[in-house]
Amino acid sequence: MIRILVLIAMLAVQPAQARGLIRDAEIEHALSQVAQPILQQAGLPGSTRIYVIDDDRLNAFVGNARAIFIHTGLLLRLGTSDELQAVIAHEAAHIANGHLTRRPAAIRSAATAAGLGLILSAAAAAAGGAEAGIGVAAGTQSAAQRSLFAHTRAEEASADQSSLRYMANAGTDPKAALKVLELVEGQEFLSAGRQDPYARTHPLTRDRIRAVEAFAGSVAPQARDRRAVDYWHARAMAKLSGFTRPPARTLRALRGERSEFAALGRAIAHHRQADLPRALAGIDALIAARPSDAYYHELRGQFLLEGRRPAEAAAAYARAADLAPGEALIQAGLGRALLAAGRDAEALQVLSAARGRDPSDPSLLRDLATAHARAGQQGLATVAAAERAAVTGRLEDAGILAERASGLLPTGSGGWLRAQDVLAAAEQARR
Image 1 (cartoon, helix red, strand yellow):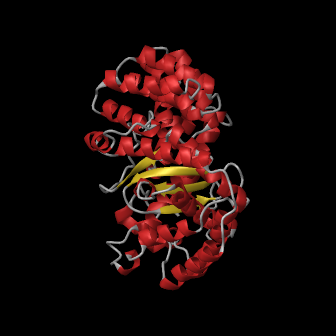
Image 2 (cartoon, helix red, strand yellow):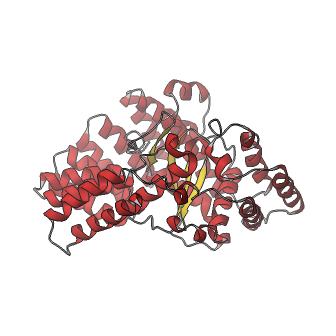
Image 3 (cartoon, helix red, strand yellow):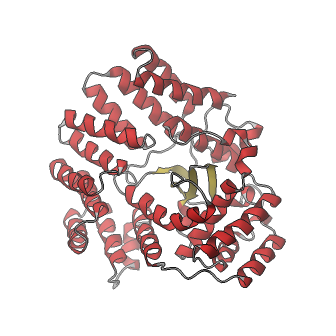
């Protein structure tokens, strides 16, 4: 996927099903467009973000008031934007209704790499114990963390009622919630080892389904213009599918399709088949139709960078950064291309600015560590490596690296303080 999906940061301890956090500017922007009408109805802060985990199982969960996580397995099985909004509305209701306040381990900011890593580690323990292990550090499987995301039936009923109101007020068909419940119905009757995590963390009963059915049948959604929501949902799914499914399958499925989303999927499939000329022809056609679309320029940069044309990639990323100057993940791609092109000083400047906006991108942190090392800044390189370990859930390793960084950096400096954040998260994980 954009520069990161192909370079997904794999989490340290992982079964075949449980892989890593996907950071992609276009997909995160698209999901924010889908989520915004719901989050507005829930009264949640604008900083609440949707993160994607590359895992084929059905699951979604809340880290805290600033982070909702959804597995690719669930995203790609939802047929419409309404169904995706139903999932987001339900998770948002858990936040708005205060269900996380009774779980102290959940009250941890995801604004830092260490905080996000702590949430991911706790989520792995909560969803399935040791077998789920998304890089779970030693000690994270305490009783409190195992129950972190396991909601009671009362909380589920409360979240259902609130989420249906959010949906109706946002112009989303509440009946979409039933489609989601039908998708996971039956999971609760399987043995624990065969259930998807959603069944364990979101208890499902026939009474709950009947209550949702009754409400959904009695409420008509407000009339809203849903074209933007539908557009960004379709675009996100085209990109996610293109990067996670076999390219030959993608090309077969899109044969004869003439939509923008089909063109996007084909370009990605050609890229994954290492057919750079056809990939570039596809993305160039999309850029011709939408010349001011930062995310298409960014994708062109990814194709060129992974096609070993870093100078051209840097130019494409620079154009994307000009069009979307606030997108830290696009800046990260520009920094990566500059590093590959040997423009180390520029890369360090760009990557440092990107980290200031978003410290939770594993690939950005890896590249920042490289840039600091090339500049002879070993202490800052080590703290960036510690943050990368933290954001991928490897909190024991993160603590070791942060301790080393603390000894290399001046006490009280910005880098030293970042190392203390990681040390605090590692210590909390050990409790």
